[in-house]
Image (cartoon, rainbow, N blue to C red; front, top):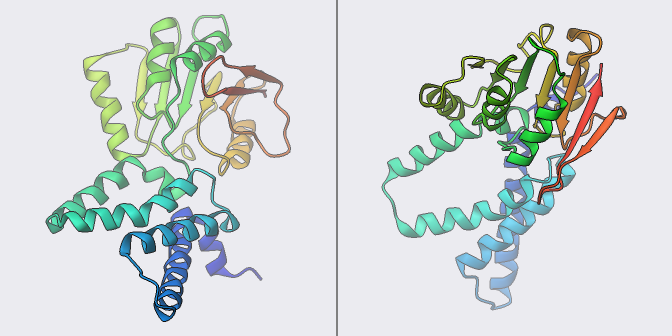
Length: 259
């Protein structure tokens, strides 16, 4: 029988991130005791650096994605710097709420906010089927750069974005007010609740964490001949039918699966 606490740990990346910080904190206390016993100075800044390095080192064995490494390393140092500024208490709460509203999906599902660049937008445009009336979904549409580009380039098609990070969603809805697209819709809906059966193309730029489950969802729901496009992140044990190398500084790769 599986340990329910272990299952909880696997489900929520933020729990593993906090656990890594706890490891870093324990190691820092131990280092402080040893250094003071030897007569060495223990300035707070140096201790925060030790904390961050150990927390980052503890991150990978816990199965977190590599983008967590700099976050874990910088967090203790940043916290120490902010404390030194002695801001009013409400500042901490406000920053926490704003970060949570932006990186909501990173906390719950291990999916940070990634933004596609203009070269990638144009590459996706070339992958859209050349027939009127097609429908494309962007799962985790972020600020909507991809959708605004393809919606403008293909007025004969319909586009739909799905986003659940509250502040990011509100920003994209506000953009829709000032930069309207008649063929574009933004929905506050989890990608897991989105019905993909009506879409000819589904695009995502997420993280390694949800890819296996999301690909299976696409296979179940999308019609034969549809396209499932992942920016950079592979589907475990499934080879893409086509790989588009984007000529950008990121060396972006679009993995195209024909369902």
